[in-house]
Length: 391
Image 1 (tube, one colour):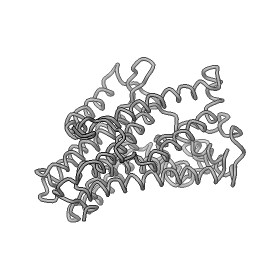
Image 2: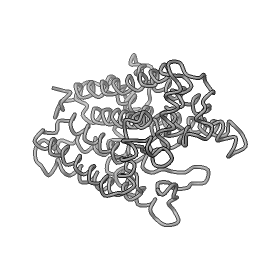
Image 3: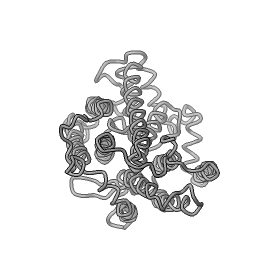
């Protein structure tokens, strides 16, 4: 029985992808250092110890590493067989969070389920579950969306159900991340342009409509266009983030010397951690972060390409989806910090404080490495459908 069938990653002349492993590890450890710095004052005031949140983040890292190892050891075929089950679990999580007495509301959004010392944010797991489901659906020969419109629309309709449930929380940021990954996977797996281009245009129109129909989203957009005119209102977070970034210059104020983390910049250790990175370590620190994510995402997409070329359609779909999920979320977070995008509550993957995001991202990294390892170890599979990378 082969190492793949045993589900055990062992010495076989096929090592794990070092680029993904080193990039993810570097971002995670760098994030731990910056979370420790950015959270110290808030932790001292709210919990009586400056390292409280840093230690909690360390626990999340340990849990995420455990998930990483599980994903690394679990055969990919198990994920593929769980496609519909994970979709059903996604619907269940998003419905459960809206049940009175179960869902926990924070800042007007109901996205969390208290589980003792841990608070479950279902939307973070839904991101991964949705991509696993879609990858499995598109890998089935009988479900080729190139062949007819109905098969193409079915996964979009099912994803639309999840999007509607997310909007009810509301969690617009998660919707954008999920839909970006879904469309990317469909494109790379070979969606015909006669279907795909109208889908892109329709999706853009829906986003504009959702922004226009919700006053708070429209207010965010207005304050984003000129944050200094609303610096004590809707533009407060962005102006404080821009002050932090401007103060950093080339090499920053030095690790631990941020001024904005002294209760000026809200969510300094979560959504706006990048601003503290730039303030303390300057443009040099920002370049390190950008380089880390660029390398990680590009290498993930290359893994997807190799999987497609080897005939491993599910592996290629999933590797592409994981890479786009991480890349789009990082891009949105960085864009918000730099004032290039309206403020959204999305963490910086692998770096920001946030247990659910960190655990799920490390789970995805382990799965990405497993996808690559299996596709290189096993004999080439028959090329059933190709996909754009396989051509």
